[in-house]
Image (cartoon, rainbow, N blue to C red; front, side):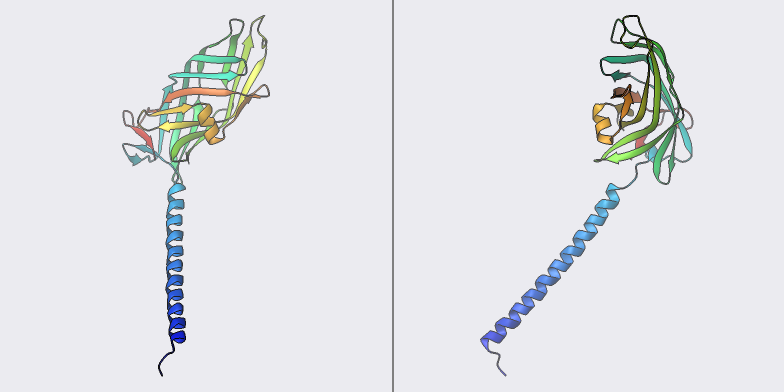
Length: 222
């Protein structure tokens, strides 16, 4: 039987709809695969590497800040020697660490009326972990606690023990092999330090250099 024009048109429309449905289905599957791939890449945990190879076991990293300061509203404290010692390892595919030492020496303020009577890191070790945020790698430190006792007859904080406590986040630079802490890196990581009821700013640039098994080898994070 010869198909009428209306019958032919109806079958043609059905074929077009089927082909369109197949294209939509395949497109959806492809999009899901691409999303899964992107998610897997984005969620990949950063790890410590030496000369491009993932760190096995533990290593000790040490350094002295090129420059570092802590600012309580109205008063900035700097230390000529802002040192640190960090034990690092890769655990479960993620770079982790333990800040075991943070000696602070020769500390002064930006006020001629205020001096630093004493300053010390407390409750060590502090736990550290690597994080990737917006394609940049950061080191996240928890349990930060630094006690600063100020002195000076004309100093508003004379005899005041200011305890800086909270979390810190610093961005890692593979080329310069440094960790930089600043207002920007704190904002990016959601880190917060407080003292005397106010948020404070911590800025500092720290070199990252292996001290034991991987001495002289380039330390990177990826």
